[in-house]
Amino acid sequence: MASHDLAREAAALDAIQLTEPQACLFELIILGALAPLSGFDGDHPLLTARAYSPGARVALRDGFNVRLGVLTVAACEAAGAEFALRGPVEVIERPRWRGFDSLRLTPAELRQRTGPCVAWVPSPWPTLEEAWRAAAHSRESGLPVVLFVPSHLPPHVSLAARVRASLAAAAEIGAQVVIVPVAVAALLPAVLAAYGAGQVIESGGDSQLEAVAAIRHTEHPPRREQGFCLWFTGLPSAGKSTVAAEVATMLEERGRRFTFLDGDVVRTHLSKGLGFSRDDRDTNILRIGWVASEIVRHGGVALCAAVSPYEATRERVRAMMGDGQFLLIYVATPAEVCETRDVKGFYAQARAGAITGFTGVDDPYEAPATPSLRLETGETTPRDNARAVMEFLVQEGFL
Image (cartoon, rainbow, N blue to C red):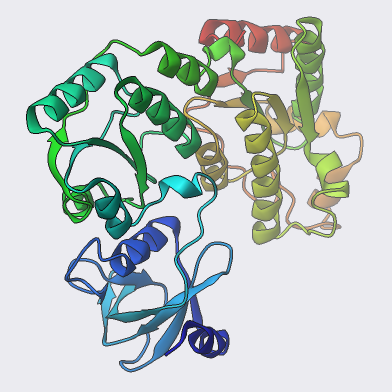
């Protein structure tokens, strides 16, 4: 079937939105990089949340809702909480990835360009030792070196930074750089073979190439130059916003830029219209967390003050940040003290039954088991607690 006819059919079919690893697997399949695999089968089924009957045709979309192809379900098996779909795929188009299009060669394109080659799969930050080994293998074998960059493998380094570092390293020995859509390390040997690589250079070494070191510094600056999120959690009227405001002043005195995301203010803008059901509270917290993660990703400081009563939701926010950049500050004010500070009278209204679902009265607050810092506000001033936060930031290397 022509791709435009298949696209019209796919528009009317039930669709599965592929995750990035699934889109990588789809691309490897359609490029022939996992031959003889021609669909989702064997050790590589398509995991999805719902079951489909054999014979069903299902559209496959990427994360941007671009229609990639159609899967004809040959088998559907339970796989824990999910279902494993197996069957052949028909292609509408290759997945679209952002950036470095000229480096995303197919196996056929690379074989035509270089023929057999020596594969260099670098460590996340290619080293001088790797470049020397790659050059030596090339001289001994008479084959060109191709530096392969898996597009979705850990550790936590952006693809753009890995590719830029790889280009700088490859320039040292005149190697070709190719991005391969690999998200599972175990698939790499088969993929390299499909690209015509007969020898593989092992990664490792400590000597940083100067150009790579500069890129690495930009991607992973010293901690004092990194962004971070201070997440103040605690009961209503615990003093979260008050302490956070004092911290904001002290950061400003040090010349650090920050964004203050106060729970009450966010609800009048970003989360306007949300109620106080568990789902709505989670949505509110995750919205704050997403904004904070973007601020942190760009090297800024996010001060967030929100009740955020549920441990699981706080952990989901933590997962949005880079390693160690989410700092949970537990403002551990006793409920009876909070109630005396409640100028809006919410505690009294909740105890009288005038409002329901109020955290600390008829809705639970799950205190953090292992906060980054615990503040006791009963006997200390907001400024004292802010100083404790600043001392903690210095101790952790952020200031």
